[in-house]
Length: 268
Ligand SMILES: CC(C)(COP(=O)(O)OP(=O)(O)OC[C@H]1O[C@@H](n2cnc3c(N)ncnc32)[C@H](O)[C@@H]1OP(=O)(O)O)[C@@H](O)C(=O)NCCC(=O)NCCS
Image 1: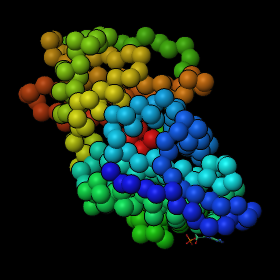
Image 2: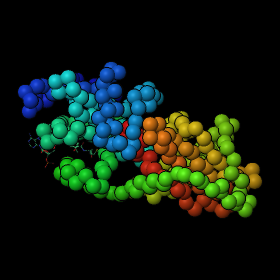
Image 3: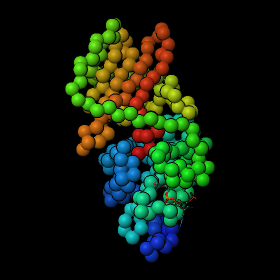
Image 4: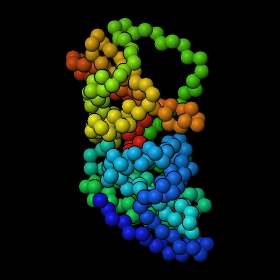
């Protein structure tokens, strides 16, 4: 694991000193989450969730940058679902940009990605954020794909029409192995720029089964698909459906739909 010494960057515009360090204290994690949520409100995270992920996957690197007692940026480097690709997330509060902080965070994250055995490092940038896209391009990143986020207002929902030969049921802990088997079949079929095998069971279960409910589609005794609801923001009452579709043999599973990209939750 990378040993990251506290690192002084030099005098900031206001005359104070800036320092990059690993997030370790509760205060650092709180600030990390605040920076993330300020810049990435569509993918909110919590301190508890972030610490839980780090406890389970100690190879995750969470950095904060402090200037005169205030955390003004954050950095993350860790594994992604794609083999040999590390995930990077650098965030700098808007009023602190264009002072070299983003680049310093990237430079601090990069050796960690190399140590993880990654051949490439990838990140996600909002499509409308031309400055950040330019920043990444200047540092050697090339675009390999775009995610489309879809949102649907919920209101008076009509009951679903029954399907011929398929029964939808609530799933329980007893079904977890069967759900994972569907995930393992579906994951590689996702339209991602690089092959993406399913994550190990524990990682998958921690992310996919953390919501209030999982529904399964049964063809007789066979589980052929599932949908898991995951809270994304308690305050806003948002939830995200993660849908997988698979078929037992024969026929071979043809495709699989998901409503969000995997890199997103791995990078938080
Ligand atoms: C991308 C992001 C991290 C950059 O942060 P930043 O702190 O502004 O980054 P830097 O200051 O290192 O670089 C920004 C520009 O300011 C320039 N700069 C650095 N110090 C400067 C200074 N003292 N005066 C003027 N310009 C300066 C840099 O050269 C750079 O320009 P360049 O890209 O043409 O080389 C930030 O915009 C951000 O948080 N974006 C949203 C999240 C995101 O998309 N992250 C990237 C993908 S993970």
